[in-house]
Length: 509
Image (cartoon, rainbow, N blue to C red; front, side, top):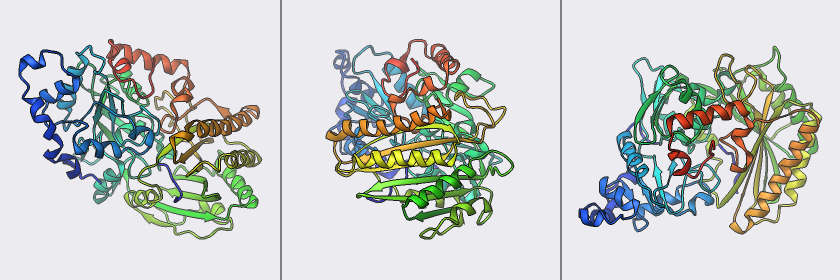
């Protein structure tokens, strides 16, 4: 297996593989059902198909299998919705929510899917209900002065970046091409520019959202400040976002991927250099983002640094301590973000049979603490090495810097530059190993978190984009943030449609 780094629709129009009329051959009869038949309370999928012919895929359609197989992880692929609804406009989403929300039937439940990259079961798919597949709502449109890009919620960032590249612009988005716009921006968003501009959700200046009951609302900080804040991390608790209006930024980046031999001496050097890189003070460079990747695959360990700099300079001096560590070579160059994402994303396979991941954050500790964290990981991984197809990646990277004066739900101190995030992701072949891998990875992380807690460096924050549903994401942000999330839910969804009818995802209640 190639090393796994976790992470081109046109500027408008539909993907050819998703738009052919053959998708809908099974729906003609349903669309023509007489009122007497429909009045017998047919399945919700049939009702939606009758009201919006050409937008629903049933299990008998070839496109159903294609849509299911496009999820990244097996946990999502193996779920079986009763049908898949594929809207092309906000109005169609509104009709769907109004229609399904009014039905008091067991099958009137749904999931919302964008890129389909979240690993755990139920995040963006459903058993027996309806999956709302947003991928046909994928346009990327610049405003008159190119300061804002409107992104369809079903787009993927590889396509977004290529759409903006001719304009010399980029946005705060995912770092591999397959990351979906909707899930990424509604869950926070760690980006190449996060040290200067914070989480990607803070670049959103407006949302188009379909609320429970089908009402379409354009949300800004001025129009609906409570909902505007709740959407910056509140995921699918308030409605279906169909468009994100986001700030644009200049498009040029230095990218280098440096590989090293995996030895105790190299790990000690990495710990020392990373610790110094993360120290606050006059040497802090807001354009410098990086990731330290420790990988285990095929019975062997690997180490590499991904170095990204958004200041437009070649060979930034801030990375010299990393490249001075004896290495196996690198190929740094100035590129557009679209090209960086293509290169970096080439290391990630298109799917994985099974996967599990956890993330946690802490204050930059001394170098010897990093070495202890690396050692805990090595020892724990060896105990799982006989799992078929086992691969694990341990990523250490700077946390996004919450900008001063920015409203945030995350409970992180604004302006703090020495927060660090770790992410551990395991991939493997068989569902029979789900529990063993979950317990093994959880025990490694529990030991690492315990070390950081005892030494006074652990912080409560769990980043939602990388988190497993078991991690208590919203609780980790603090009681005040939970209260704001819940208040917005009660105000904008008083019947709890997106709490009860959308069972997947992270819930605020």
